[in-house]
Length: 216
Image (tube, rainbow, N blue to C red; front, top):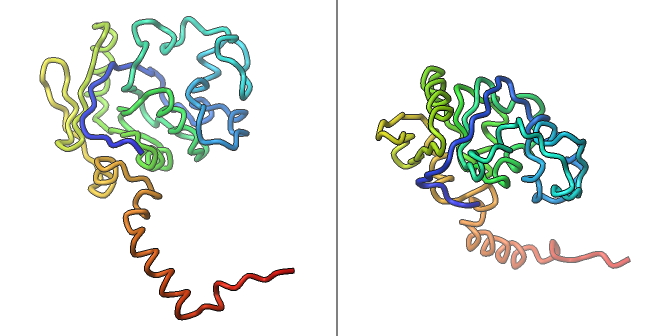
């Protein structure tokens, strides 16, 4: 998992409340047995005018010119601001996969659905909760100033606006530690690889029958 320390990026506004995980990545794309390739289908039903299916070439699709991520001023955005209860609905982990694979490193909203919020941390995306008034002001500034960028400093736990104003946010210490070091659940386990190998070697030496395999 990619480390998250300080990130500066273009901001895109998702001006909708209660954006659910089926909107973030529609159900037909859950058929994939891979954990990659979801970025082109992020917000698929809003991004395109025609229905999409897994494996379809995005270049063959009809983009919706009114959808925010299809507007040239937001091309390359890596920070998404949203309204209340972002990521609600079913608990599919594909939603943060799609957001991360599209290029988003941080999400800012007044509130997130709990399971989605947890899944973001496990997949290298930082969800930041700010007061509704602060988020509303960010929407106003993003709309008013093309090319609007924010800097997210995880170590200091602040979002820095272009004028230098800092917006403080809370993050649970263990989640912060994992993001700063790029540890997902597997990465956390692999920190103890030497101890695991030593245990397995001792186990086989003391109980060799556990290593026997039936041949039938």
